[in-house]
Image 1 (cartoon, rainbow, N blue to C red):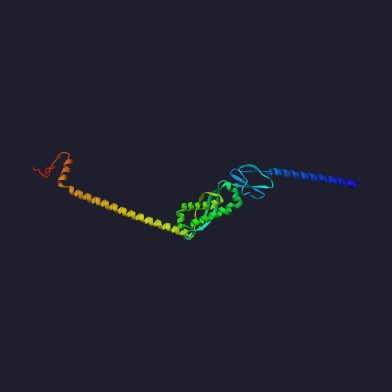
Image 2: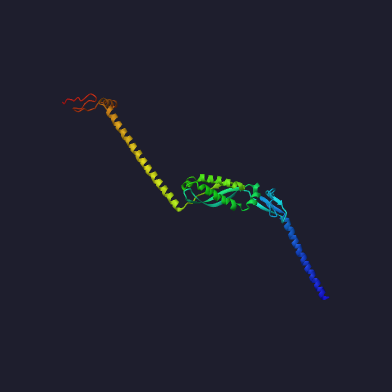
Length: 279
């Protein structure tokens, strides 16, 4: 009887513990189901609903920003960002004359929100690595191959504009829209940079030499003009300075006064040399 009582008490304790565990598990399951029945989509995002891991291509379920309900264990919501995003790629290519160019290309882009299910089903959530980065590289290669190395520097804006247009065309089938495309700088081999520097120095020296030549020519022409003017002035003076003209100028400047004291042989103004007889 004693042994029977001990066994009965032990079984009752185990049963209580088991019921407690079941209750806790059931409670956790209920909480999980309740919270798993809701999902939230943020502003600038869309949620693509997958039923048992698949998307209905004909009628995909897409959640707009807000709180939505879903079926636990069946539905999974993949969030896609539809705002403008930035992507940078280290690109490398060769110019028309065989110069190797590297550059960091930066773009701003966004996806067509209505086509997010297509992107998820056909490309996946890592569409940046699989599509955008590759197409940036290809567009950069296709455009730079049409320019010589020096032209890439001189026509940077034109190159960027053409690369942007080409990238847009490449990404349209994937419903990815390019908003901005920039090439901040180019990196060339040292030999090419040295050649560019030598060319710039030579051009600067040629420009300085031309400026000196132009200055010397201008100074020579100026000196010739001055000399010619002086010669013409002297010639004009020689023609106009007659004795009559000089006498007229003297008369116009005379104040009308005769000298107070006259010495012998002193001529009177404008009369002629009339000597005064000595006493």
